[in-house]
Length: 308
Image 1 (cartoon, rainbow, N blue to C red):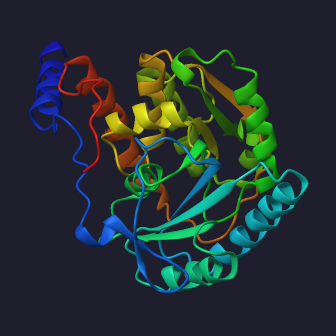
Image 2 (image 1 turned 135 degrees about the vertical axis):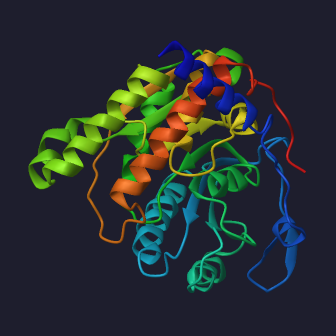
């Protein structure tokens, strides 16, 4: 058994990319404004010029995106009318979609202006974590919210995660993270799931707890609010680009002693999930093991590198 563990550790170490690559294709260094002109994307390393950036990773979301965008922009516009000092931007990251996701998102850019809605189209699919990272690195907000394109979480619940972030003050080095959570809905969701899916869910939760993140019950909810400094530090270190990226993100945050809040949010299951249950959980299980082993063996370091 000990020999087997050594072999697994060696494989994890040898196959690891030492640091994540942050290369942008030439076309990804620009977004197209409402007039159709190319504008250079800003950098996470620039001083913030907005109160809030909302990053929406989107892959083949032409059908589900409008509902989410309508709800989010309705909320954000009302909030800005009530408080003119509140400024925001929504960054839709089209993760190499094969449908009309970019075209759908550009309608909102034209309606609200490219200062409020920006569309970043990636040349090829990077995975949800890779798409979120590209959006984060192109953002201008003091706070950065990750929000799924399916609109499963009610957007007004941003106030709950904002309260969670506020309650963590004083933030060490201006870093803090507030995670939306569906853990309180677990009993109801089990009643609607098959035994197999329930077994996979419990298995995944156990692996997350055992290998990586002990303090957060729901690591996978796509509704997370980060201070700009926390986003810059964690995403600069992130290696996993697909489904398990949330776990590595929180693992990095724990290692860096960034305070994390977990806040209950409303959540509704929306049809059209990209997750293929068995194979996705298998891939995520492998990624969880490699997260732990690669940091443990020093193959991955908590270093910070800039995106080019």
